[in-house]
Amino acid sequence: MNERIEAREVHLIDENGEMLGVTPPVRALEIARARGLDLVEVSPNFVPPVCLLMDYRRYKEEQIQQERQ
Image 1 (cartoon, one colour):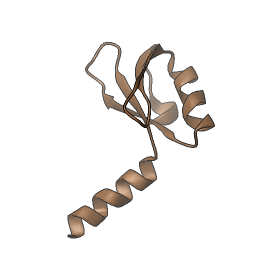
Image 2: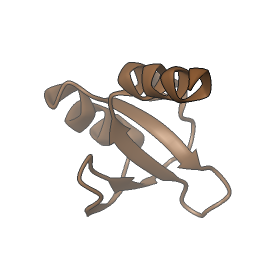
Image 3: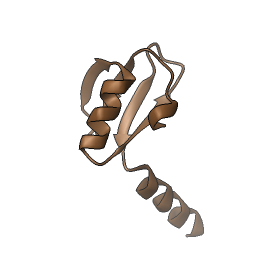
Image 4: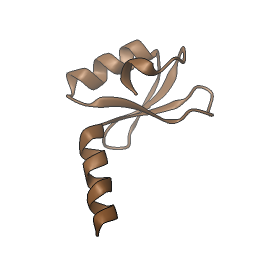
């Protein structure tokens, strides 16, 4: 997540599910921060890895709520 992504390039998908293309993780992180989101690696085995722009805190909170139900 965010600065911990070590790949040279990533497939970047935005918060609406649209592919933004292949970009260096530094640029992807800039885009995420400009949108107030996190950069999350979701498919590390792809070449290059797939990363999503998302609000990770909100995602985790929603998962916890679902587990409680």
